[in-house]
Amino acid sequence: MDVLPEWLATLEEEEVVFIKKFLLASGSLKEIAQQYGVTYPTVRLRLDKLIQKIKISEDSANDPYIALVKRLAVKDKLDFDTAKILITEYKKQTGGK
Image (cartoon, rainbow, N blue to C red; front, side, top):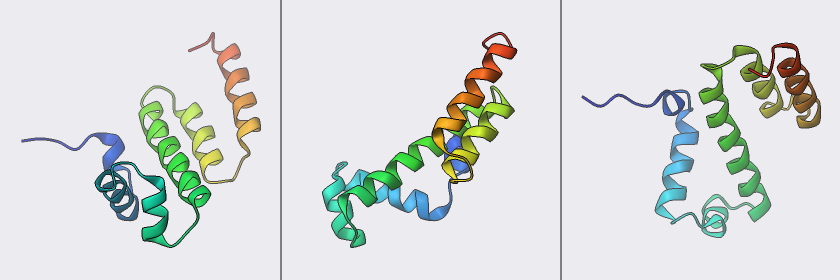
């Protein structure tokens, strides 16, 4: 029996639907923008946030602190520049883990 990858299991249903539409549109952001009735940059931003969310789910197994900082940045609770500084300083303190 196949088991869903952890990153896929953490996605909300709406995000899975977006990925399905993206794949069926052969990765055409313009086509997805038309389907959702939004602009190309809006779709690009949504895709970028989804990519970040997937990366975070992979990182959480490695380091919960880094995953938390990235999650806060993706949810717009923390800006990305501040998140990068926090992660860089944390890595210096922990020896680059």
